[in-house]
Structure formats: structure tokens, C-alpha cells
Image 1 (cartoon, rainbow, N blue to C red):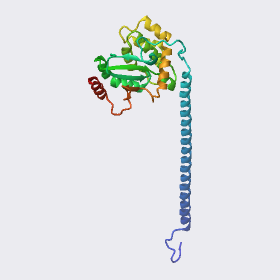
Image 2 (image 1 turned 180 degrees about the vertical axis):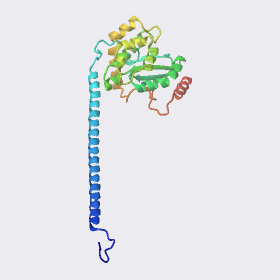
Image 3 (image 1 turned 135 degrees about the vertical axis):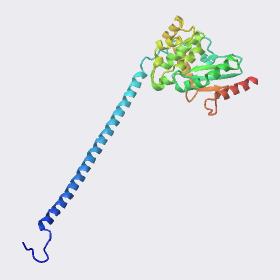
Length: 275
């Protein structure tokens, strides 16, 4: 067929229409893919928001559960502190609220306010225990221990009261320093009210030679010194102290001294001993 001058070899028009349609189809397909991708992103973002909100709800519920447990424990198994005030043997100071360790003739006195559930108190004891023993054994230092029940009030439970009563019972048996150390060495987590169980306190007495006796067990089970413990904590509150431990060397709060170390404490006591 003769296409005439100037038209020989020109592409048929239907081919151009086909290419144009393909281009439009390609653009349409690209738009659809873009729309689909955006739709996927929206759905993914929606799922993410649902997960975040759901996680937040779970977190709030979990926190509420913890608060509920603490609140439930706060009033549970509270020891009777309304009985007659019975100070442990050898207690001295105002109202007989201090348990002394060391020679009365020592020129330095260390007043220590502690709670057997208090992690910071354990930290102090772990760091200073050997130095304090060395100084009390040498007659250079006298320590007066005051027992508080701060953690019972903050966390709920009654482990602070029970442990303090057991420590006072150990004082009756002449075993306070040894049992005091055992309680801090075996201190449970702050949120674990393990010391509320007299059975645990009696079990730990087995780590002190001669303490696990019928008299000690009865003293622990009866809560003989509970009222004394309550009076001791009342004195702690009236003292205006910021927390436990509070450590006073000859009336000066040394626990707040950031430069204080066992070595520095030892030097201060030795200097006082030399006059």
C-alpha cells in the first residue's frame, strides 16, 4: 500500500494511542501504589497508637496493683505496741531508748539511728562495721544504737517493728551486737517484708552462738519490746532527723559529711581518745 509522500515509515496512529494509554495506565498504577502505601502507613500508625495506649493502660494497671498490694499490706499484721513499755536489759539514755555497745569510759560516743529494713542503713553497716568493732573493742568508742521503724511507714508491713523487737530480745540475752550484724547481713529487699515473720527472725538467731533459746523465742513471739520500739521511733520523729541512718559522733552528724570514710572516722575517734 502506498502511504504517499512524507508518510513512508511513519508509525501508525493506533500505536501512539496505545503508548499514551499505557502511560496513563502506568501513572494510574503508580498513584494506586502510592495510595496503597499511604493506607498501609496509616494502618501501621493506628496499630502503633493502639499498642502504645494499651501498654500505658497495662502500666497503669500494674502500678495500681503494686499500690494496692502496698496499701493492703499497710494495715496487715500490725504488732501490738499499746502494751506496757519494757526496755531491754541494759538500755540507757533518755527513757532508756539507747542500746549501748562498748566501754562507758570511751571518750567518743557514736549515736546511730537505724531501721533493720533500711537499705541505706545496711550500706552504712557494710562499710563501717569492721572499723566500729575495732574502735569499740579497743575501748576508744562507745556506740548507742537507736531503733526506728521508718520503712514500715513508707512501704507498709511490720518487719521493722518485729526486727527491732527481736534485736531488743537479743540485748536481753547479751547478744545484741552479733544479732544486729546478722540482721543487716541478711536484710531482705526493701519491698520484701520478710522480717515481719517471727519464724525468720528466730531462724537467723541460729547464726549467733547461744541466742536461739526458748527465752529468746518467747520474747520474739510475744513482742515483749514492741511498745519500747514504738517509743524509740517516736523519739526519732521528734528528733527532726531527715532519715535513716542518722549517725552522730559526739553530737555532730557525720553521715551528712560527704568526705567521711571509715578511715576518717577512725582518725577522729583516735584523736579524741588522745585528748
